[in-house]
Amino acid sequence: MARKKIALVGAGQIGGTMALVLAQKQLGDVVLIDIAEGVPQGKSLDIMEGRLVLGSSCIVEGSNDYAALKGSDVVIVTAGLPRKPGMSRDDLLDVNFGIIEKVGKAIKEHAPNAFVIVVTNPLDAMVYAMQKISGLPANKVVGMAGVLDSARLACFVAMELDVSAEDVQAIVMGGHGDTMVGLHDFCSVGGIPLPQLMDKATFDKLAKRTAGAGGEIVALLKTGSAFYSPGVSAIKMAEAFLLDKKSVVTVAASLNGEYGVTGGLYCGVPVKLGANGVEKIFQVKLSADEQKAFDVSVAAVKDLVAWVDKKMA
Ligand code: A3D
Image 1 (tube, rainbow, N blue to C red):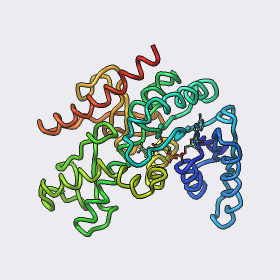
Image 2: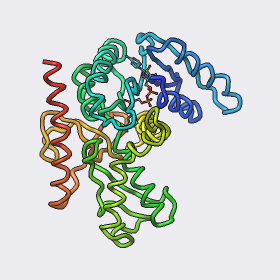
Image 3: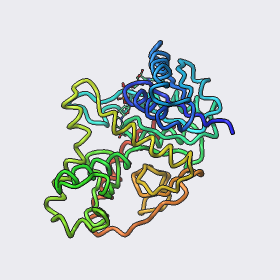
């Protein structure tokens, strides 16, 4: 059986990280695509030359031509500008929409059967635009944010309790912005419900840090945003699709009535990811306060999507 093909559109910090991790995991052959001449070629050649040491036989190529998308099973899109200190994700809306428009048209032309994972910010609005522009079915177009936001919350819970991060289950729903909602009752540590180990006030502090975690890293790096953890989070989603894992993860998915959200608006909710993309959206029972916080988060996404709809009209 031929190897799977994974296209990474955007060969910057996240794209380069993902190419290396994909080669290590040998999930398929990789093509890095970017408008910057030489960058995708240079990064792919660098990884190719490390394959003996990595113990990998994957082919990693670089291109400046969207036609290289042809035959891709998975496309992960990070093309776009990252934040600089003081910027919110929403400040990227105008410039990154123009980029998603070009990439979405290219996916429609060259890779209409792919599973598409959008990482470009502002995430929920960009994945919504991608689905509309590419015309791909909504179950095959998702946004990466919940996997990362949940991993960040799990990290902070693990640090607070001095336990292994891999034993913490956490869930963050809503839009990928300051209004994202961490769910105390849905977290657990080695199977123990978190409320038995941590009071709500402490949890709320960690959930607040999670909502600002991207900005915390931007302020430290000064020249860009987080890339290692976003990269591995997107790969987890690609892996769920490629290996038909039926993984239960939080992703930005198209909602049509779930949680009272309509119109194909994208927002972070728990789903089952497998060979058919989003195979199920889980509708968990939220408390009145959680639902209220989720609604506020959805309203923030709606504002951005209204801008996108106007641009596409
Ligand atoms: P960066 O290292 O700047 O890489 C972006 C790459 O996109 C650059 O190499 C550009 O040349 C390339 N590019 C620009 N326009 C095009 C185009 N039309 N076609 C192809 N390539 C193009 O950024 P990064 O990798 O650090 O971040 C990429 C995006 O991910 C940004 O929008 C970030 O805000 C976003 N991001 C999202 C999360 C989430 O959790 C959702 C986390 C971190 C970063």
